[in-house]
Image (cartoon, rainbow, N blue to C red):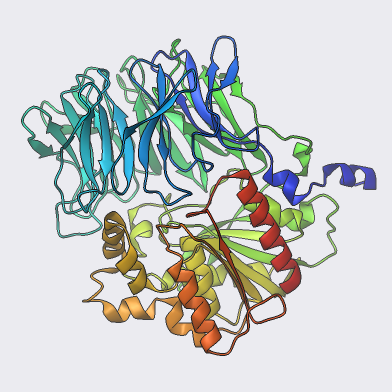
Length: 610
Protein backbone atom coordinates (compact mmCIF):
# COMPACT_ATOMS: atom_id res chain seq x y z
CA UNK A 1 0.00 0.00 0.00
CA UNK A 2 1.46 3.37 -1.00
CA UNK A 3 1.73 6.16 1.54
CA UNK A 4 -0.67 8.26 -0.56
CA UNK A 5 -3.31 5.54 -0.51
CA UNK A 6 -2.85 4.93 3.21
CA UNK A 7 -3.17 8.62 3.94
CA UNK A 8 -6.32 8.83 1.88
CA UNK A 9 -7.92 5.99 3.81
CA UNK A 10 -7.07 7.18 7.30
CA UNK A 11 -9.72 8.97 9.32
CA UNK A 12 -9.87 10.63 12.69
CA UNK A 13 -12.11 9.44 15.53
CA UNK A 14 -14.12 12.64 15.27
CA UNK A 15 -14.69 12.12 11.53
CA UNK A 16 -15.99 8.64 12.32
CA UNK A 17 -18.21 9.84 15.17
CA UNK A 18 -19.75 12.54 12.99
CA UNK A 19 -20.79 10.27 10.13
CA UNK A 20 -24.57 10.76 9.76
CA UNK A 21 -26.77 7.83 10.73
CA UNK A 22 -30.46 7.04 10.29
CA UNK A 23 -32.48 5.17 12.91
CA UNK A 24 -35.89 3.46 13.20
CA UNK A 25 -37.17 3.79 9.61
CA UNK A 26 -40.98 3.44 9.57
CA UNK A 27 -43.11 2.90 6.47
CA UNK A 28 -46.21 5.09 6.52
CA UNK A 29 -49.76 3.67 6.50
CA UNK A 30 -50.21 4.52 2.81
CA UNK A 31 -46.87 2.92 1.87
CA UNK A 32 -45.86 6.06 -0.01
CA UNK A 33 -43.48 7.64 2.51
CA UNK A 34 -41.10 6.72 5.29
CA UNK A 35 -40.22 8.50 8.52
CA UNK A 36 -36.91 8.11 10.31
CA UNK A 37 -34.48 9.72 12.69
CA UNK A 38 -31.37 11.20 11.07
CA UNK A 39 -28.49 13.24 12.50
CA UNK A 40 -27.11 14.85 9.34
CA UNK A 41 -27.31 18.28 10.98
CA UNK A 42 -25.19 17.08 13.91
CA UNK A 43 -28.30 16.54 16.03
CA UNK A 44 -30.90 13.78 15.93
CA UNK A 45 -33.98 15.04 14.06
CA UNK A 46 -37.10 13.54 12.50
CA UNK A 47 -37.38 13.30 8.71
CA UNK A 48 -40.04 12.25 6.20
CA UNK A 49 -39.16 11.02 2.71
CA UNK A 50 -41.45 10.48 -0.26
CA UNK A 51 -40.91 7.10 -1.94
CA UNK A 52 -41.77 8.10 -5.51
CA UNK A 53 -39.65 11.25 -5.71
CA UNK A 54 -37.07 10.64 -2.99
CA UNK A 55 -37.76 14.11 -1.63
CA UNK A 56 -36.71 14.34 2.01
CA UNK A 57 -37.52 17.02 4.53
CA UNK A 58 -36.75 17.62 8.17
CA UNK A 59 -39.93 18.11 10.19
CA UNK A 60 -38.47 18.53 13.69
CA UNK A 61 -36.24 21.27 14.99
CA UNK A 62 -35.00 20.19 18.39
CA UNK A 63 -38.29 18.77 19.69
CA UNK A 64 -37.22 15.11 19.53
CA UNK A 65 -34.62 13.48 21.84
CA UNK A 66 -30.91 13.91 21.09
CA UNK A 67 -30.50 10.13 21.32
CA UNK A 68 -32.53 7.83 19.08
CA UNK A 69 -33.09 5.04 21.61
CA UNK A 70 -36.82 4.48 21.16
CA UNK A 71 -38.68 3.82 17.89
CA UNK A 72 -41.18 6.12 16.22
CA UNK A 73 -44.63 5.34 14.79
CA UNK A 74 -47.08 6.88 12.32
CA UNK A 75 -50.59 7.80 13.37
CA UNK A 76 -53.46 6.03 11.60
CA UNK A 77 -53.99 8.80 9.02
CA UNK A 78 -50.32 9.35 8.22
CA UNK A 79 -50.56 13.00 9.30
CA UNK A 80 -48.37 12.78 12.40
CA UNK A 81 -45.43 10.82 13.76
CA UNK A 82 -45.30 9.70 17.40
CA UNK A 83 -42.04 9.78 19.32
CA UNK A 84 -40.83 9.15 22.88
CA UNK A 85 -39.54 12.09 24.87
CA UNK A 86 -37.59 11.80 28.10
CA UNK A 87 -35.37 14.06 30.16
CA UNK A 88 -31.75 13.74 29.05
CA UNK A 89 -31.76 9.97 28.71
CA UNK A 90 -33.59 9.01 31.92
CA UNK A 91 -36.09 6.88 29.92
CA UNK A 92 -39.09 8.19 31.86
CA UNK A 93 -40.80 8.64 28.51
CA UNK A 94 -43.90 10.55 27.56
CA UNK A 95 -45.39 10.01 24.09
CA UNK A 96 -45.51 13.04 21.82
CA UNK A 97 -46.74 13.66 18.29
CA UNK A 98 -45.20 15.80 15.56
CA UNK A 99 -47.27 16.76 12.54
CA UNK A 100 -45.77 17.16 9.08
CA UNK A 101 -45.63 20.93 9.52
CA UNK A 102 -43.37 20.52 12.55
CA UNK A 103 -45.87 21.24 15.33
CA UNK A 104 -45.29 19.03 18.38
CA UNK A 105 -47.58 18.26 21.30
CA UNK A 106 -47.72 15.75 24.15
CA UNK A 107 -50.19 12.90 23.67
CA UNK A 108 -49.64 10.63 26.68
CA UNK A 109 -47.99 11.93 29.84
CA UNK A 110 -47.49 9.43 32.64
CA UNK A 111 -45.32 9.04 35.71
CA UNK A 112 -42.57 6.58 34.90
CA UNK A 113 -41.99 5.02 31.52
CA UNK A 114 -44.47 4.93 28.62
CA UNK A 115 -43.65 3.08 25.38
CA UNK A 116 -45.91 3.04 22.33
CA UNK A 117 -46.72 -0.50 21.20
CA UNK A 118 -49.20 -0.10 18.32
CA UNK A 119 -51.65 2.24 16.60
CA UNK A 120 -55.15 1.06 15.60
CA UNK A 121 -56.77 2.04 12.31
CA UNK A 122 -59.22 4.25 14.22
CA UNK A 123 -56.38 6.14 15.94
CA UNK A 124 -56.38 4.46 19.38
CA UNK A 125 -52.98 3.86 20.91
CA UNK A 126 -51.75 0.76 22.71
CA UNK A 127 -48.90 1.57 25.06
CA UNK A 128 -46.95 0.02 27.91
CA UNK A 129 -46.41 1.84 31.19
CA UNK A 130 -45.04 1.08 34.63
CA UNK A 131 -47.15 3.78 36.30
CA UNK A 132 -48.99 1.01 38.18
CA UNK A 133 -45.69 -0.36 39.57
CA UNK A 134 -45.29 -2.97 36.85
CA UNK A 135 -45.10 -2.75 33.07
CA UNK A 136 -48.67 -3.31 31.80
CA UNK A 137 -50.67 -2.39 28.70
CA UNK A 138 -52.95 0.63 28.44
CA UNK A 139 -55.41 1.81 25.79
CA UNK A 140 -55.54 5.51 24.94
CA UNK A 141 -58.38 7.08 22.95
CA UNK A 142 -57.26 10.42 21.45
CA UNK A 143 -60.88 11.35 20.73
CA UNK A 144 -61.70 11.49 24.44
CA UNK A 145 -58.24 11.76 26.00
CA UNK A 146 -59.04 8.77 28.22
CA UNK A 147 -56.63 5.97 29.09
CA UNK A 148 -57.67 2.52 30.30
CA UNK A 149 -55.45 -0.12 31.88
CA UNK A 150 -55.96 -3.38 29.99
CA UNK A 151 -53.67 -5.84 31.79
CA UNK A 152 -53.01 -6.12 35.51
CA UNK A 153 -50.14 -8.58 35.58
CA UNK A 154 -47.47 -8.98 38.25
CA UNK A 155 -44.86 -9.71 35.57
CA UNK A 156 -44.02 -7.32 32.69
CA UNK A 157 -46.34 -7.31 29.68
CA UNK A 158 -44.72 -6.64 26.32
CA UNK A 159 -45.14 -6.96 22.53
CA UNK A 160 -48.67 -5.56 22.35
CA UNK A 161 -50.41 -5.31 18.97
CA UNK A 162 -53.92 -4.63 17.65
CA UNK A 163 -55.85 -7.14 15.56
CA UNK A 164 -56.91 -5.80 12.13
CA UNK A 165 -60.47 -5.27 13.44
CA UNK A 166 -59.16 -3.30 16.43
CA UNK A 167 -61.32 -5.34 18.81
CA UNK A 168 -58.54 -7.60 20.09
CA UNK A 169 -54.90 -7.33 21.09
CA UNK A 170 -52.06 -9.82 21.32
CA UNK A 171 -49.31 -9.56 23.92
CA UNK A 172 -46.67 -11.60 25.76
CA UNK A 173 -46.17 -12.11 29.49
CA UNK A 174 -45.46 -14.78 32.09
CA UNK A 175 -48.05 -16.21 34.47
CA UNK A 176 -46.07 -19.27 35.58
CA UNK A 177 -43.55 -19.79 38.37
CA UNK A 178 -40.80 -20.34 35.79
CA UNK A 179 -39.29 -16.86 35.59
CA UNK A 180 -37.70 -17.51 32.19
CA UNK A 181 -41.07 -18.39 30.69
CA UNK A 182 -43.00 -16.17 28.25
CA UNK A 183 -46.38 -16.97 26.69
CA UNK A 184 -48.50 -15.29 24.03
CA UNK A 185 -52.05 -14.12 24.77
CA UNK A 186 -55.00 -12.69 22.87
CA UNK A 187 -57.43 -10.38 24.68
CA UNK A 188 -60.94 -9.37 23.59
CA UNK A 189 -61.16 -5.64 24.29
CA UNK A 190 -64.94 -5.81 24.62
CA UNK A 191 -64.98 -8.14 27.62
CA UNK A 192 -61.37 -8.03 28.76
CA UNK A 193 -61.08 -11.82 28.49
CA UNK A 194 -57.62 -13.14 27.63
CA UNK A 195 -56.61 -16.58 26.46
CA UNK A 196 -53.16 -18.09 26.24
CA UNK A 197 -52.10 -19.50 22.89
CA UNK A 198 -51.41 -23.21 23.05
CA UNK A 199 -47.78 -22.97 21.96
CA UNK A 200 -44.52 -24.14 23.46
CA UNK A 201 -43.85 -25.45 26.95
CA UNK A 202 -43.23 -24.00 30.37
CA UNK A 203 -39.89 -22.22 30.20
CA UNK A 204 -39.96 -21.47 26.48
CA UNK A 205 -40.33 -18.02 24.97
CA UNK A 206 -43.48 -17.56 22.87
CA UNK A 207 -44.45 -14.26 21.24
CA UNK A 208 -47.19 -13.34 18.76
CA UNK A 209 -45.34 -11.27 16.17
CA UNK A 210 -47.95 -10.21 13.60
CA UNK A 211 -51.64 -10.54 12.79
CA UNK A 212 -52.76 -12.02 9.48
CA UNK A 213 -54.69 -9.43 7.40
CA UNK A 214 -57.87 -11.49 7.90
CA UNK A 215 -57.40 -11.49 11.69
CA UNK A 216 -57.89 -15.24 12.06
CA UNK A 217 -54.22 -16.20 12.38
CA UNK A 218 -51.08 -14.99 14.11
CA UNK A 219 -47.44 -15.26 13.12
CA UNK A 220 -45.70 -16.65 16.22
CA UNK A 221 -42.23 -17.55 17.39
CA UNK A 222 -41.24 -20.09 20.03
CA UNK A 223 -38.04 -21.82 21.16
CA UNK A 224 -39.42 -24.96 22.82
CA UNK A 225 -37.34 -27.05 20.39
CA UNK A 226 -34.20 -25.04 21.25
CA UNK A 227 -33.89 -22.93 18.09
CA UNK A 228 -36.45 -20.17 17.67
CA UNK A 229 -38.97 -21.25 15.04
CA UNK A 230 -41.56 -19.37 12.97
CA UNK A 231 -45.13 -20.65 12.84
CA UNK A 232 -48.70 -19.66 11.95
CA UNK A 233 -51.25 -20.02 14.74
CA UNK A 234 -54.90 -20.61 13.78
CA UNK A 235 -57.16 -18.89 16.32
CA UNK A 236 -60.23 -20.89 15.26
CA UNK A 237 -58.89 -24.31 16.21
CA UNK A 238 -55.89 -23.39 18.41
CA UNK A 239 -53.41 -25.16 16.16
CA UNK A 240 -50.00 -24.06 14.96
CA UNK A 241 -48.34 -24.85 11.65
CA UNK A 242 -44.59 -24.53 11.90
CA UNK A 243 -42.79 -23.04 8.94
CA UNK A 244 -39.24 -23.52 10.22
CA UNK A 245 -37.66 -26.97 10.15
CA UNK A 246 -35.82 -26.40 13.44
CA UNK A 247 -32.33 -26.71 12.01
CA UNK A 248 -31.38 -23.07 12.49
CA UNK A 249 -32.56 -19.99 14.35
CA UNK A 250 -35.44 -18.23 12.54
CA UNK A 251 -37.25 -15.20 13.89
CA UNK A 252 -40.59 -14.41 12.19
CA UNK A 253 -41.19 -10.78 11.25
CA UNK A 254 -44.44 -10.18 9.36
CA UNK A 255 -47.07 -11.55 7.02
CA UNK A 256 -46.85 -10.27 3.47
CA UNK A 257 -49.36 -7.55 2.56
CA UNK A 258 -51.58 -10.06 0.69
CA UNK A 259 -51.47 -12.61 3.53
CA UNK A 260 -50.03 -15.27 1.23
CA UNK A 261 -46.44 -15.09 2.49
CA UNK A 262 -44.57 -14.69 5.77
CA UNK A 263 -41.16 -13.09 6.28
CA UNK A 264 -38.54 -14.30 8.76
CA UNK A 265 -34.90 -13.63 9.58
CA UNK A 266 -32.51 -16.59 9.62
CA UNK A 267 -29.49 -16.27 11.95
CA UNK A 268 -26.23 -18.16 11.42
CA UNK A 269 -22.62 -17.41 12.35
CA UNK A 270 -23.55 -13.95 13.68
CA UNK A 271 -25.21 -13.03 10.39
CA UNK A 272 -28.90 -12.50 9.66
CA UNK A 273 -30.59 -13.01 6.30
CA UNK A 274 -34.25 -12.55 5.32
CA UNK A 275 -36.31 -15.40 3.95
CA UNK A 276 -39.92 -15.49 2.75
CA UNK A 277 -42.26 -18.45 3.16
CA UNK A 278 -45.02 -19.23 0.67
CA UNK A 279 -47.91 -20.13 2.98
CA UNK A 280 -49.56 -22.28 0.34
CA UNK A 281 -46.73 -24.80 0.10
CA UNK A 282 -44.57 -23.80 3.06
CA UNK A 283 -41.42 -23.45 0.97
CA UNK A 284 -38.85 -20.82 2.01
CA UNK A 285 -36.97 -18.62 -0.43
CA UNK A 286 -33.88 -16.59 0.43
CA UNK A 287 -33.79 -12.96 -0.60
CA UNK A 288 -30.85 -11.92 -2.74
CA UNK A 289 -29.16 -9.47 -0.38
CA UNK A 290 -25.50 -9.13 0.58
CA UNK A 291 -24.16 -11.23 3.44
CA UNK A 292 -24.25 -9.44 6.75
CA UNK A 293 -27.27 -8.35 8.76
CA UNK A 294 -30.69 -7.45 7.35
CA UNK A 295 -33.73 -6.18 9.26
CA UNK A 296 -37.28 -5.56 8.07
CA UNK A 297 -38.20 -1.89 8.49
CA UNK A 298 -40.88 -1.04 11.02
CA UNK A 299 -44.34 0.39 10.52
CA UNK A 300 -46.30 -1.22 7.73
CA UNK A 301 -43.07 -2.86 6.41
CA UNK A 302 -44.22 -2.73 2.77
CA UNK A 303 -44.52 0.02 0.20
CA UNK A 304 -47.73 0.76 -1.69
CA UNK A 305 -46.54 -1.47 -4.54
CA UNK A 306 -45.96 -4.38 -2.14
CA UNK A 307 -42.16 -4.23 -1.94
CA UNK A 308 -40.69 -4.98 1.53
CA UNK A 309 -38.22 -2.49 2.99
CA UNK A 310 -35.01 -3.66 4.67
CA UNK A 311 -31.99 -2.16 6.38
CA UNK A 312 -28.80 -3.86 5.25
CA UNK A 313 -25.30 -3.69 6.71
CA UNK A 314 -22.04 -5.66 6.86
CA UNK A 315 -19.01 -5.36 9.17
CA UNK A 316 -17.31 -3.01 6.69
CA UNK A 317 -20.34 -1.22 5.19
CA UNK A 318 -22.73 1.09 7.02
CA UNK A 319 -26.51 0.70 7.05
CA UNK A 320 -28.57 1.52 3.99
CA UNK A 321 -32.33 1.25 3.47
CA UNK A 322 -33.50 -0.86 0.54
CA UNK A 323 -36.77 -1.68 -1.18
CA UNK A 324 -36.65 -5.26 -2.51
CA UNK A 325 -38.36 -6.77 -5.54
CA UNK A 326 -37.49 -10.24 -6.88
CA UNK A 327 -33.73 -9.88 -6.60
CA UNK A 328 -33.60 -6.19 -7.46
CA UNK A 329 -33.13 -3.47 -4.86
CA UNK A 330 -33.79 0.24 -4.84
CA UNK A 331 -31.78 2.27 -2.35
CA UNK A 332 -34.07 4.57 -0.39
CA UNK A 333 -31.44 5.85 2.07
CA UNK A 334 -27.79 5.54 1.14
CA UNK A 335 -25.05 4.89 3.67
CA UNK A 336 -23.24 8.17 4.28
CA UNK A 337 -19.44 8.03 4.48
CA UNK A 338 -18.76 11.77 4.48
CA UNK A 339 -15.15 12.37 3.43
CA UNK A 340 -14.03 8.91 4.59
CA UNK A 341 -13.01 6.38 1.96
CA UNK A 342 -15.29 3.32 2.53
CA UNK A 343 -12.24 1.11 1.91
CA UNK A 344 -10.81 2.39 5.19
CA UNK A 345 -13.07 0.07 7.15
CA UNK A 346 -11.96 -3.42 8.13
CA UNK A 347 -13.99 -6.59 7.62
CA UNK A 348 -14.61 -9.03 10.46
CA UNK A 349 -13.76 -12.73 10.41
CA UNK A 350 -16.10 -15.18 12.12
CA UNK A 351 -14.01 -17.40 14.42
CA UNK A 352 -14.58 -19.95 17.17
CA UNK A 353 -12.60 -20.89 20.26
CA UNK A 354 -13.02 -23.18 23.25
CA UNK A 355 -14.03 -21.93 26.67
CA UNK A 356 -12.71 -23.40 29.92
CA UNK A 357 -15.24 -26.26 29.91
CA UNK A 358 -14.85 -27.03 26.19
CA UNK A 359 -17.89 -25.05 25.05
CA UNK A 360 -17.39 -23.65 21.55
CA UNK A 361 -17.80 -19.88 21.50
CA UNK A 362 -18.35 -17.90 18.32
CA UNK A 363 -16.81 -14.47 17.90
CA UNK A 364 -15.95 -11.76 15.39
CA UNK A 365 -12.28 -10.85 14.91
CA UNK A 366 -11.08 -7.52 13.53
CA UNK A 367 -7.38 -7.73 12.59
CA UNK A 368 -5.72 -4.35 13.02
CA UNK A 369 -3.00 -5.35 10.57
CA UNK A 370 -5.65 -4.96 7.86
CA UNK A 371 -6.27 -1.32 8.69
CA UNK A 372 -4.85 1.43 6.48
CA UNK A 373 -1.10 1.74 7.04
CA UNK A 374 -1.13 -1.49 9.06
CA UNK A 375 1.86 -3.81 8.96
CA UNK A 376 1.91 -7.60 8.95
CA UNK A 377 5.10 -7.54 11.02
CA UNK A 378 3.94 -5.50 13.99
CA UNK A 379 2.39 -6.83 17.17
CA UNK A 380 -0.88 -5.07 17.94
CA UNK A 381 -2.48 -4.56 21.34
CA UNK A 382 -5.81 -6.36 21.68
CA UNK A 383 -9.25 -5.37 22.94
CA UNK A 384 -12.05 -7.79 23.80
CA UNK A 385 -15.29 -5.85 23.29
CA UNK A 386 -18.18 -7.48 25.17
CA UNK A 387 -21.78 -6.94 24.08
CA UNK A 388 -24.63 -6.04 26.43
CA UNK A 389 -27.85 -7.81 27.25
CA UNK A 390 -26.81 -10.33 28.41
CA UNK A 391 -29.22 -11.70 25.80
CA UNK A 392 -27.70 -9.71 22.97
CA UNK A 393 -25.34 -10.62 20.16
CA UNK A 394 -22.36 -9.18 18.35
CA UNK A 395 -23.31 -9.46 14.69
CA UNK A 396 -21.80 -9.14 11.23
CA UNK A 397 -22.97 -5.55 11.03
CA UNK A 398 -21.12 -2.24 11.04
CA UNK A 399 -19.82 -1.72 14.58
CA UNK A 400 -18.81 1.89 15.12
CA UNK A 401 -16.75 1.19 18.24
CA UNK A 402 -14.95 -1.80 16.72
CA UNK A 403 -14.00 0.25 13.67
CA UNK A 404 -12.84 3.09 15.93
CA UNK A 405 -10.62 0.73 17.95
CA UNK A 406 -9.18 -0.90 14.83
CA UNK A 407 -8.43 2.53 13.36
CA UNK A 408 -6.36 3.24 16.47
CA UNK A 409 -4.31 0.07 15.98
CA UNK A 410 -6.09 -2.41 18.26
CA UNK A 411 -7.07 -5.89 17.10
CA UNK A 412 -10.57 -6.49 18.42
CA UNK A 413 -12.49 -9.64 19.40
CA UNK A 414 -16.27 -9.59 19.90
CA UNK A 415 -17.29 -12.84 21.66
CA UNK A 416 -20.83 -14.20 21.76
CA UNK A 417 -20.59 -15.73 25.21
CA UNK A 418 -23.19 -18.17 26.57
CA UNK A 419 -26.35 -16.20 27.18
CA UNK A 420 -26.14 -14.63 23.73
CA UNK A 421 -29.05 -15.02 21.33
CA UNK A 422 -28.76 -16.71 17.96
CA UNK A 423 -27.75 -20.21 19.12
CA UNK A 424 -30.95 -21.51 20.62
CA UNK A 425 -32.69 -21.55 23.98
CA UNK A 426 -30.27 -23.87 25.77
CA UNK A 427 -27.30 -21.66 24.97
CA UNK A 428 -29.23 -18.48 25.78
CA UNK A 429 -30.57 -19.72 29.10
CA UNK A 430 -27.24 -21.22 30.20
CA UNK A 431 -26.56 -17.91 31.94
CA UNK A 432 -29.59 -18.12 34.24
CA UNK A 433 -28.58 -18.25 37.91
CA UNK A 434 -24.97 -17.94 36.79
CA UNK A 435 -24.19 -14.28 36.03
CA UNK A 436 -20.50 -13.75 36.53
CA UNK A 437 -19.81 -17.48 36.14
CA UNK A 438 -19.42 -19.54 32.97
CA UNK A 439 -20.14 -16.64 30.64
CA UNK A 440 -17.23 -14.74 32.18
CA UNK A 441 -15.07 -17.83 31.62
CA UNK A 442 -16.11 -17.49 27.95
CA UNK A 443 -14.97 -13.87 27.88
CA UNK A 444 -11.73 -14.70 29.68
CA UNK A 445 -11.06 -17.53 27.22
CA UNK A 446 -11.61 -15.02 24.42
CA UNK A 447 -8.94 -12.80 25.93
CA UNK A 448 -6.49 -15.68 26.13
CA UNK A 449 -7.34 -16.76 22.57
CA UNK A 450 -6.79 -13.23 21.27
CA UNK A 451 -3.50 -12.99 23.14
CA UNK A 452 -2.36 -16.24 21.51
CA UNK A 453 -2.68 -14.77 17.99
CA UNK A 454 0.74 -14.35 16.42
CA UNK A 455 0.03 -10.70 15.62
CA UNK A 456 -1.27 -9.69 19.11
CA UNK A 457 0.84 -8.67 22.10
CA UNK A 458 -0.50 -10.83 24.95
CA UNK A 459 0.90 -8.36 27.47
CA UNK A 460 -1.30 -5.57 26.10
CA UNK A 461 -4.89 -6.79 26.36
CA UNK A 462 -7.87 -4.70 27.43
CA UNK A 463 -11.51 -5.60 28.06
CA UNK A 464 -14.20 -3.08 27.13
CA UNK A 465 -17.99 -3.12 27.24
CA UNK A 466 -21.14 -1.21 28.03
CA UNK A 467 -24.17 -2.17 30.13
CA UNK A 468 -23.85 -5.93 30.66
CA UNK A 469 -20.60 -5.56 28.74
CA UNK A 470 -19.58 -3.04 31.41
CA UNK A 471 -20.49 -5.60 34.07
CA UNK A 472 -18.28 -8.06 32.19
CA UNK A 473 -15.39 -5.59 32.19
CA UNK A 474 -15.69 -5.25 35.97
CA UNK A 475 -15.97 -9.05 36.35
CA UNK A 476 -12.91 -9.68 34.21
CA UNK A 477 -10.75 -7.23 36.12
CA UNK A 478 -11.87 -8.54 39.53
CA UNK A 479 -12.35 -12.27 38.80
CA UNK A 480 -9.81 -12.89 35.99
CA UNK A 481 -7.18 -10.22 36.68
CA UNK A 482 -4.24 -12.19 35.31
CA UNK A 483 -5.28 -11.67 31.68
CA UNK A 484 -5.74 -7.93 31.41
CA UNK A 485 -3.49 -4.91 31.21
CA UNK A 486 -6.53 -2.64 31.70
CA UNK A 487 -10.26 -2.32 31.10
CA UNK A 488 -12.98 0.19 30.27
CA UNK A 489 -16.30 -0.27 32.08
CA UNK A 490 -18.99 1.82 30.38
CA UNK A 491 -22.36 2.18 32.18
CA UNK A 492 -21.68 -1.13 33.90
CA UNK A 493 -22.97 -3.04 36.95
CA UNK A 494 -20.89 -3.47 40.10
CA UNK A 495 -23.34 -4.24 42.93
CA UNK A 496 -26.28 -6.49 42.03
CA UNK A 497 -28.19 -6.02 45.28
CA UNK A 498 -27.99 -2.24 44.99
CA UNK A 499 -29.04 -2.49 41.34
CA UNK A 500 -32.16 -4.42 42.34
CA UNK A 501 -33.08 -1.89 45.00
CA UNK A 502 -32.91 1.00 42.53
CA UNK A 503 -34.38 -0.68 39.44
CA UNK A 504 -37.64 0.02 37.63
CA UNK A 505 -40.30 -2.67 38.31
CA UNK A 506 -39.85 -4.51 35.01
CA UNK A 507 -36.08 -4.47 35.50
CA UNK A 508 -36.53 -6.02 38.94
CA UNK A 509 -38.47 -8.82 37.21
CA UNK A 510 -35.63 -9.29 34.73
CA UNK A 511 -33.06 -9.57 37.53
CA UNK A 512 -35.23 -12.13 39.34
CA UNK A 513 -35.55 -14.10 36.11
CA UNK A 514 -31.78 -14.10 35.67
CA UNK A 515 -30.55 -14.59 39.24
CA UNK A 516 -33.50 -15.76 41.32
CA UNK A 517 -34.94 -14.12 44.41
CA UNK A 518 -32.39 -11.64 45.88
CA UNK A 519 -33.10 -12.76 49.44
CA UNK A 520 -33.20 -16.51 48.82
CA UNK A 521 -30.11 -16.31 46.58
CA UNK A 522 -28.34 -13.58 48.57
CA UNK A 523 -24.98 -15.40 48.55
CA UNK A 524 -25.05 -15.71 44.75
CA UNK A 525 -26.03 -12.06 44.28
CA UNK A 526 -23.14 -10.99 46.50
CA UNK A 527 -20.56 -13.37 45.03
CA UNK A 528 -21.33 -12.35 41.44
CA UNK A 529 -21.08 -8.64 42.22
CA UNK A 530 -17.69 -7.27 41.09
CA UNK A 531 -17.57 -4.96 44.11
CA UNK A 532 -17.25 -8.06 46.31
CA UNK A 533 -13.93 -8.85 44.60
CA UNK A 534 -12.48 -5.37 44.27
CA UNK A 535 -9.44 -6.29 46.38
CA UNK A 536 -8.40 -8.84 43.73
CA UNK A 537 -7.95 -6.21 41.04
CA UNK A 538 -4.43 -5.57 39.79
CA UNK A 539 -5.00 -3.67 36.53
CA UNK A 540 -6.30 -0.10 36.22
CA UNK A 541 -9.89 0.51 35.11
CA UNK A 542 -11.59 3.42 33.40
CA UNK A 543 -15.06 3.88 34.89
CA UNK A 544 -17.44 5.83 32.59
CA UNK A 545 -21.09 6.33 33.49
CA UNK A 546 -24.07 8.50 32.52
CA UNK A 547 -25.55 10.47 35.41
CA UNK A 548 -29.15 9.93 34.22
CA UNK A 549 -28.90 6.19 33.58
CA UNK A 550 -32.07 4.42 34.84
CA UNK A 551 -30.96 0.90 33.88
CA UNK A 552 -27.58 0.90 35.57
CA UNK A 553 -27.84 3.90 37.90
CA UNK A 554 -24.85 6.15 38.53
CA UNK A 555 -24.60 4.70 42.04
CA UNK A 556 -23.10 1.56 40.44
CA UNK A 557 -20.06 3.58 39.36
CA UNK A 558 -19.84 5.66 42.51
CA UNK A 559 -19.79 2.76 44.96
CA UNK A 560 -17.07 1.05 42.93
CA UNK A 561 -15.02 4.24 42.83
CA UNK A 562 -15.40 4.55 46.60
CA UNK A 563 -14.35 0.93 47.08
CA UNK A 564 -11.20 1.49 45.01
CA UNK A 565 -10.34 4.57 47.04
CA UNK A 566 -10.99 2.69 50.28
CA UNK A 567 -8.33 0.14 49.30
CA UNK A 568 -5.90 2.98 48.68
CA UNK A 569 -6.09 3.35 44.91
CA UNK A 570 -5.58 6.86 43.55
CA UNK A 571 -7.74 8.35 40.83
CA UNK A 572 -6.36 10.19 37.80
CA UNK A 573 -4.38 9.81 34.55
CA UNK A 574 -1.24 8.99 36.53
CA UNK A 575 -3.12 7.06 39.21
CA UNK A 576 -4.45 3.54 39.69
CA UNK A 577 -7.82 4.13 38.00
CA UNK A 578 -9.71 6.80 36.10
CA UNK A 579 -13.29 7.95 36.50
CA UNK A 580 -15.69 9.99 34.36
CA UNK A 581 -19.33 10.91 34.89
CA UNK A 582 -21.24 11.98 31.79
CA UNK A 583 -23.72 14.76 32.51
CA UNK A 584 -27.07 14.83 30.66
CA UNK A 585 -26.64 11.24 29.45
CA UNK A 586 -28.44 8.03 30.31
CA UNK A 587 -27.78 4.43 29.31
CA UNK A 588 -25.58 5.18 26.31
CA UNK A 589 -26.40 7.52 23.48
CA UNK A 590 -26.52 7.83 19.70
CA UNK A 591 -26.00 11.60 19.97
CA UNK A 592 -23.14 12.83 17.78
CA UNK A 593 -21.49 14.97 20.45
CA UNK A 594 -21.66 12.10 22.93
CA UNK A 595 -19.97 9.80 20.40
CA UNK A 596 -17.24 12.38 19.82
CA UNK A 597 -16.72 12.61 23.58
CA UNK A 598 -16.75 8.81 23.99
CA UNK A 599 -14.15 8.24 21.29
CA UNK A 600 -11.96 10.90 22.83
CA UNK A 601 -12.20 9.49 26.33
CA UNK A 602 -11.65 5.85 25.34
CA UNK A 603 -8.94 6.60 22.80
CA UNK A 604 -6.92 8.76 25.15
CA UNK A 605 -7.26 6.29 28.02
CA UNK A 606 -6.17 3.24 26.00
CA UNK A 607 -3.28 5.22 24.52
CA UNK A 608 -2.06 5.97 28.07
CA UNK A 609 -2.59 2.48 29.47
CA UNK A 610 -1.75 0.19 26.54
